[in-house]
Length: 144
Image 1 (tube, rainbow, N blue to C red):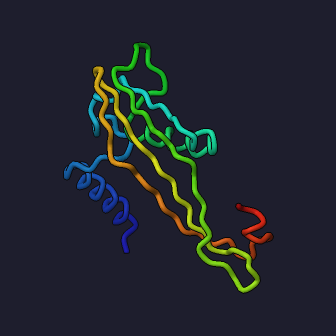
Image 2: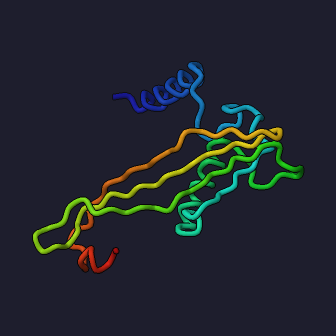
């Protein structure tokens, strides 16, 4: 096959994506300027329980919504993210009583304050099942 075929195909694919209106995540034109003077606040007991997760959620939203980390003027809208404590539940245990499959639940509530008004959004619940092979300790002795 010709060596020039793949670069030409890549260029045509890129032009086609731009022509059909596809936008990459973090593109400022995707959301317009409505979030340019906004701020995100992480709140709730889940923020204190897992500050790394809270910061990652905040950074990811800031990137996706093209929200600057600092603004020169006071923000005209604030997105409050209420992070509930992370819950971990045993799903399966082996014959020795050791837990090896768990279910983790994270619950988030969003509130947008704008022009003196507050709007609440539906609760977001993330659920993940994961496996810990040969967990070193019994689940009951580690987690109440």
